[in-house]
Image (cartoon, rainbow, N blue to C red; front, side, top):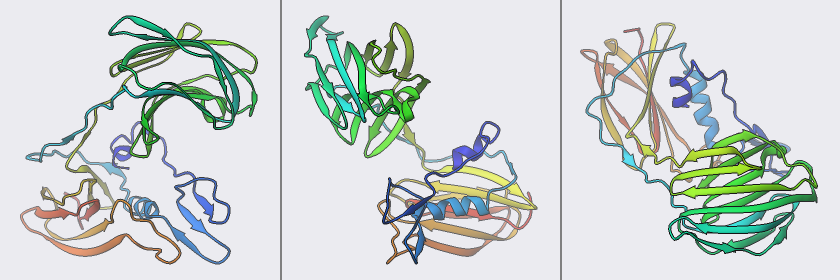
Length: 320
């Protein structure tokens, strides 16, 4: 949400989907609002969305960040795990698979096979992380809106990469990454799988550089990002005479900062925080801790503590 606001000149709108879920007919999770025949509750994400909606601001204000703690560096994920086919509702036959290790320049030919529904077929137990995999495949049946996944760098279901051929209603080819249960699309191109039409594919993994070709054309080309977690995600906006300083902490330790440039007088501090595993329910519909407290601003400066896994909005009473 901070990133959306800071790049508002490039983001046309933001929405949350799926929005509603009947607990007796759950399609997937997470959803924003859960209900049954006589009760309703919002997820912990609902609280975050509501806070950003109510205090969105009308324009961004330039700000600087100085003397902040160093960001936590996250190394790029390894691609040395297993390679497997993962069914996605379509019937797929694959053949002529060849694995070339780019470090040893040796080639291994792999067995032909088929996948359907949610079948899995492991073809390699482990790779060097530097390889080229070529193969042919054809969709022979199954759902028209589905394709197939070629997983690689697989440590387990929570840590892997996927080359998705015919993803999201059979409309694209993409490289995705699963890490600690979260899925990220790294690169995506419009493409679909036609039934009974053979395709020749080439996946090249050169350390952190991944390239996917279909029938000789590059559809996916990406370097695996090595991320970092800043001590705080920060944005500053204004609306109707208010300055709103937004501080988000996704780390396990509280962060205290000095905010300068605020109008003197009283400000309002809005705080939300919860354990990362917190979930609302009908029995416990509000696990997020919320507080609204006054804050005295003297010499345009205030000390703000953002709790672990917390959000703090500082709302001034006048524009500075």
